[in-house]
Length: 296
Image (cartoon, rainbow, N blue to C red; front, side, top):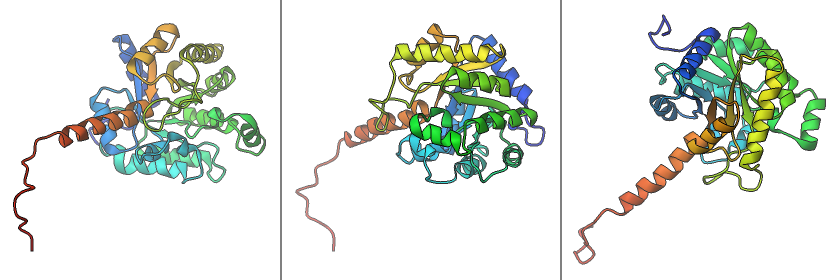
C-alpha cells in the first residue's frame, strides 16, 4: 500500500509490513532482508526483489572497507549514523519496500521513546536492534549487563516499538534472548550465529560450523515459539553467506528467510569490482612506446 502523501511505499504500518511478508511466503518465496549502507546499494537491492531493507550503522563502515564489527565500537554515534543514512541516502531512493532503522537501544544518552518517535517520523517502517549486545559475550558482556547497558534495554526498545506500531525485526544469539524478544512483541527474529565469513574482511577462525549453525538456529526458534507462534524466523551470519547456505538452513530448520549485510552488500561489491577492473586492464592498447613524445 503506497504512502498517501508521497505515492511511494514508506512508511508502512506494522500490520502492513506483516501482511506483505505473509503474502511473500504464501506465494512460495523466502523472506529476504538486506542491509544497505548507501543509496546505490538500496536502489539495486530493491530491484533484486528484497522484502526489507535494514539500515545499520555498520553499513557505513562496511562500505568504507572496514569490518562490520566496527559498528559495535565507539567510532561514532550509532543511532545518528543510521538515521543519517536513512534520511539522506536510502529513504529518498527506495521506491516501495519497507525500510527498517537500526537502533542502538542501550545508548544511555537517549530517551528511547523519544528516539523511536523520530525514527517513525522520518519514515522508517520498523526497527532492528543494532548495534546489539546479544552478540557480545564473556567478561565484557557481564560488565555491560551490570552497568546499565544490558540487553534488557533492547527488549524494552522492542516493546516500545510495538506500542508505537513499528514493525520489529531483531537479532538474538540464544534461546533465552529469543524468548524475551517474543515476550516483548518482536515480529521477526533473526538467529545470529556469528560474524559472516568470506570476502576481504570476513572472519576465518571465530565462526561455527554449518551443523552448529543449524542447531543454534533451531534452538533460537524453539525458544521464541515457546511464547508465540506468529513470529517470522530468519537466519544470519557465520557460515551462512551464500544463497545455497541460506537454502540449507531453511531446509534443516524452521527458518523462512535470510538477512544479508556483508553477504549481500559487501561481497557483491568486492568481487564484481575485482572482476570488472581486471577486464578493463585486459583491453587491447596500441603500442605507442616508439612514437616521439609530443609534450612541452
